[in-house]
Length: 289
Ligand SMILES: *[C@@H]1O[C@H](CO)[C@@H](O)[C@H](O)[C@H]1NC(C)=O
Ligand SMILES: *[C@@H]1O[C@H](CO)[C@@H](O)[C@H](O)[C@H]1NC(C)=O
Ligand SMILES: *[C@@H]1O[C@H](CO)[C@@H](O)[C@H](O)[C@H]1NC(C)=O
Ligand SMILES: *[C@@H]1O[C@H](CO)[C@@H](O)[C@H](O)[C@H]1NC(C)=O
Ligand SMILES: *[C@@H]1O[C@H](CO)[C@@H](O)[C@H](O)[C@H]1NC(C)=O
Image (cartoon, rainbow, N blue to C red; front, top):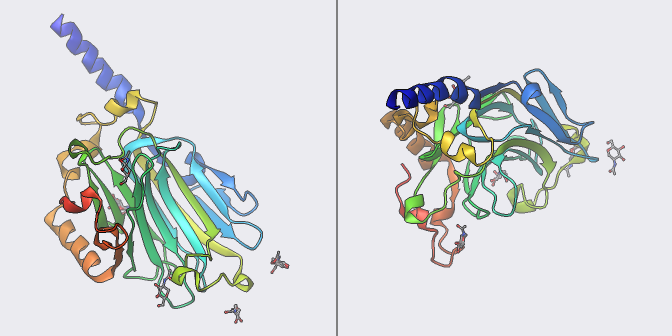
């Protein structure tokens, strides 16, 4: 009997599990355009989002995922991009949704973009952290990656971690681990708030505004409904995102992250006592790295 069970287990690992681990490579295979079909271009490993005075555009993955690494290389709207926002994020659906965000707020020529990050757990957001960059994100493609596993979420830019959110679920802090999320990208006009808080409006004479994406890789566990909650989290070799090296940043990575946070961070919700009336969210008192 025990042997039979072992055999079944082996069979399960050998045949069933590899099929849930997906390398969804290339934009055109994994995504479809959901807004501004005349404005977006999806071809091979390239995605172009266009914004003009008639429309913005957006694309999303066909499939949802639970845990893994989502990578995309992006070159943002060059020149005068004030008022525009390019978003690249993971999200589930419904009122109790989870979401892991990267948003890029444009600026007038020569002035710095803002990288805006946020996290929603079961419908609760308000966890913004914002940064300037150490390079011009409109000059070249750079690697924007979200790594997400049962232990932690890490936002990376060119392999430098800029932010971590650890799982403190056992202390009552919700963590996104029970809902599959799709990957979304969009480019739209947000000149009511994006640049210097809405002071600078989009200058439409410079349209069309174009953001370019390539090298999309979702090395992630495919979501097949509730059964995936345990499957994608279980500590087995094929679930490489659960291995020890993904549970904690290395000292070198920690040093890099501190450099970014010391020199480029411009807003941290955990420092905004005024906004939270002195009642900072509980994760602000937990070690995040
Ligand atoms: C949009 O831009 C085009 C080209 O610049 C211009 O011809 C058109 O009048 C604009 N439309 C609106 C609604 O502003
Ligand atoms: C959402 O946040 C509010 C206020 O911080 C809190 O009362 C509530 O329990 C949270 N809900 C979840 C599902 O975490
Ligand atoms: C992009 O960054 C992620 C996270 O560090 C890394 O795993 C991936 O290999 C990088 N991609 C390339 C092409 O270097
Ligand atoms: C745009 O540039 C201004 C002036 O340097 C700066 O205060 C602001 O943070 C920059 N970014 C955005 C998105 O407003
Ligand atoms: C809008 O852009 C055009 C072309 O670059 C420029 O001539 C004009 O001064 C800009 N308008 C504003 C309000 O900045």
